[in-house]
Image 1: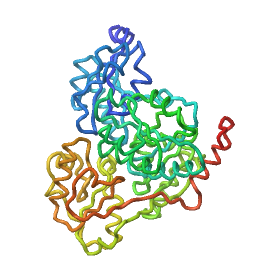
Image 2: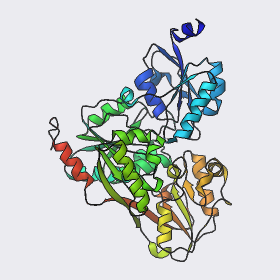
Image 3: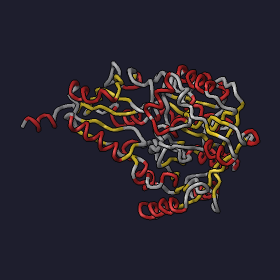
Image 4: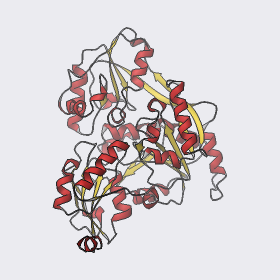
Length: 453
C-alpha cells in the first residue's frame, strides 16, 4: 500500500544526469512545463567546471522560480536519498553499454528508478528541411562530413545554416541563443577551444552557425535565415530536431562500437545514409565487420564508403624530427581514440620520434591524463577554461621537441602561444564512388514541400 501511494503521488521527483547539453534539452522539451514531475537537480560529468552552477529560473520556467542546482554526478547516491528521488534520467552520450548498466545499477541500488527518454519525445519539428549529421562514436568524422555537405549545398545556391549540438560551458543565460558568423563572434562569446573547433571551420566556409541552450528558440531563429538547416551533432548523440535526412558516420577503427555504445546504435538504426569513414586507414576485416552490422541492424540505409584524406601544410619539416602531436581533445578523451590525424601524418612523413608529453604536463592537463590514461603519448587540445588553455600552453612549450603537429580543427596559435615550429594537419571527407552531396541534393529535390530547388 505504501509503495502504491508513493508511486501515485502528485509529483515525481527527478534527477537529470547530464553533461551540459542533452540534459538541458531533455528538460526543456519534456519536463519544463510538465506538472507531473519535479526536477530536483541536474548532475554533471565528462566536462570539467560545469558543476556547482544553476540552471537559471529564466530558462527553467514558471514551475522553477529558483532555478535548478547542478551537482557533480559523484554525489548521485547521496542526492537520491536526500532529495527522495523517484527517477534518474540518463541524458548524455558516448557511453558503453557496460557503463550505462553500471549507472543503472548504481541508481537502482540507491533507491531510485533508472530511465532514458526517447528520441520522438524530445525532437523538435521544423518548418524547414532538416539534414542531421551524427555518428556512432566521438571522432568518427562528423565535422568533416558536415563541412563538405554544407559547402556542396551552398554552392548549389541554397542558404545553409548550421545548428551545432550544445556546448554551454559558460553563463547559461547569456548562451540561450548564440549566432556565429565572424571570428569576432567567437571572441564575443568567449568560446572555448572545443567550441572553436566546431564553429570556426563553418565560419571559414562562409556559413552562419547557431548554438545555445534553448533549442526551440535556436531553431526558430535559424529558420528565419535558412533554406536548409544542417544539424551538426556532438559526440554520438541523437539530433535535437526531427530530420528529413539523417546521416550517420561510423568508424571502422572501432569496429563493433556502432552496436555497443549509447546512443550510437540508435543513430545507426535511424539512419537514412551511413558513411563508413576512414576506409583508407582501416583494415579490411574491420570494414567488413562494420558493413555486416549495418546490414543486420539497418539494411535499408544507403551506405557510402569514404576516406578521411589527411592534408599536411609543411610535410618537409617532419622527416627525422622529434614531434609533439596535439590532437582533438574530445576525440581522445571520452571518444576513446588512441591516435588521430596527427599521429597518422607523423607516421606517413617519417618522423624520428613522437615525444611523450606526460612528464611535462601541468595543472588541469595533468588531471586529464589521470582521468583518461589510455591517451598515451599524445596531447589532447583541452581548453574548456582560460586556466586549462594556459596549462595547455605551458605543457606544449615544456615538451622537448623539434616540431609541434597541430591536428586540431582550428588554428591553435590563435589561442595559445607556441614557441616551436608548427605543422598543421587537416582532414577532409573523400567519398569513394558516390557523392554524399549529390545524393542529398537529389533527395531534397524530391521533397514536395521544398520549392527552392
